[in-house]
Image 1 (tube, rainbow, N blue to C red):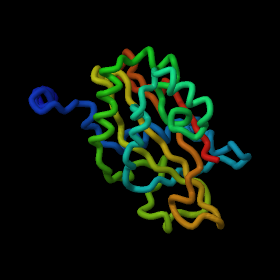
Image 2: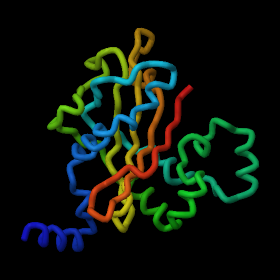
Image 3: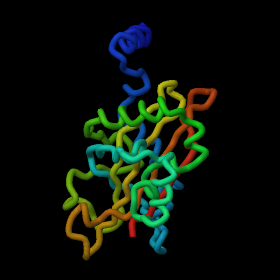
Image 4: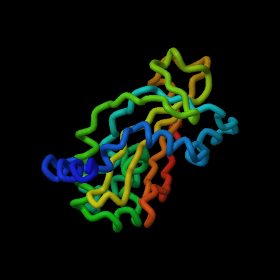
Length: 206
């Protein structure tokens, strides 16, 4: 009965049932697969045994889903050949032709709007898979992580989560100084209703 009421509530308010799952559920899912964290070995470091997360989700980098420029303009693409630092190269996910063709423009716009509307949300530690830290100062030396909230396609078949990897060392002085890389995770719902990782897009910050 509760599920039926939730369904009609979502129809009336425009909210999506799956979006009501606690963000903590997604953090647990991310941590259940160690291959989500292999970027930490890029420079030869060992992967962390404990996943330390800051206890609030981060805002989305909106360049993930939409750039201010017309990405199909030949002039823009020509310019990108000379600008390797532009978000088009390291952040915008639809630069990948397979993703660009899979998701129609209205879906891309909806993903962008959903990401734009998200606000930071507190995580609750109910899993042994990870530990939560309130501040950068509380984190021990080594790798730690921040995560966005989930963004869903309108048909609820795909979920996007942005994972930030940070590395605290003797040389880093704060959170902005500790960014190491990003991992964009795309999950797809299986026929049995389970979420399985479908794509992983990694970027190292040099």
